[in-house]
Length: 353
Image (cartoon, rainbow, N blue to C red):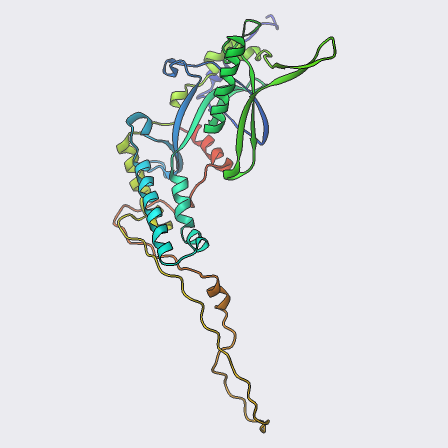
């Protein structure tokens, strides 16, 4: 057997099922090649737009998982409608609290959990690409709106400069794709993303330095096996109808309300004016001459009130959870943010469909 024979078979096809690989955008620089549109559903686009709902528990599996919003397919979504109602309630609550004389810090503290719930439940828009890294691994590259806009800007500039497809698998002078640098800086909601074409510094014969776009070839295995390595971007997340998502939301509502009672739209929120600090008791010193010692008596007046400092900080009690006749909710879980830990959980979900 010729040891130099190239194996063109996609070895992943021999596995019992194919695993989903996701490229993680780490802090700093991340180099990727965006790959061509794949599948009939792509309609010529190298990416797919998704609106994803995080933090809800699947009634069938009892596990938290991401759900695709039905907004794209049906132009309406029960979670979006619920979030809109919560936003309206939040605006009304803030206005009422201001009327009652609450300060901004007090209002923010009172509505912290409610505002976080709204932020976490709001569907997140993401754009998914087929991409390869320098090692030749093909996987899903998920970009948020800011990075996606920057990616489109760079692609359009490349087309203008070369009149070539920036996602081409080839690396010829007249037909070549280009490598992109996806950068990430910051933490949490302050994270910033950007995309630039990768460029190399070139020093000419005259000593003049210039920069050239990185059009280095893709690993040969990616070029030859792309049809087997690429993912159908229209099938990354399960698509549920409006009614199916409504069922999921109703299943989760009791647990949501238990954690954040203000989310119970069937009840008016309990708004109470902050309690004023308790007055301090002043004890006057006696000017009478000293008397003979008497048996010690129990002191009735309290001098040091341990609640004074807490009262000065205006600690507002949370309203008690409202009773509900809805189905039993899943076990309590804290509101979920789309951070790296949850993205890791999404990996496991995608690989266990």
